[in-house]
Length: 125
Image (cartoon, rainbow, N blue to C red; front, side):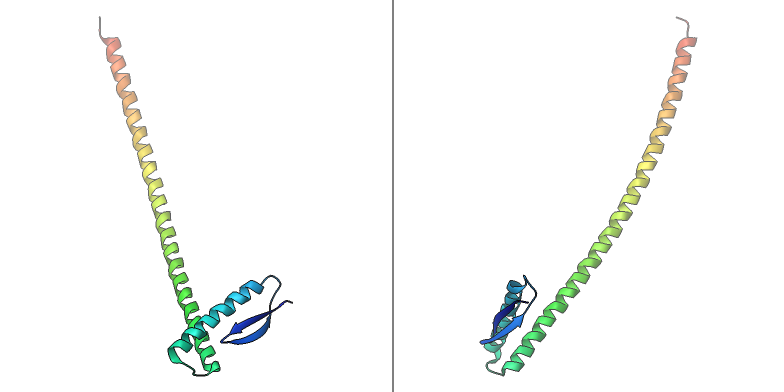
């Protein structure tokens, strides 16, 4: 299992990770360090542990917000799928009605054509 040295708040920590996850772990540590640095800039030296806890809470808050956004988007997708399904059903019903109407019109035209043909045959020239 590879080990990676990460730096958070000026301190180096050796951490183990899965093979191939080294760059990801470094990126995560960089993000956490950025939050700690931002808090340190806002609040000054309030203690390493407190800064780390506050940064962790900020990151968990971001995760919660992202989860809420994902849920909202999933709900929107479900609503759009329902609307699409209803639209497709409505469209299919309208297509069936148009087909029935066209069949009726074709039958009437056939009847009319037959009548015209009969009249034309019955007429002496």
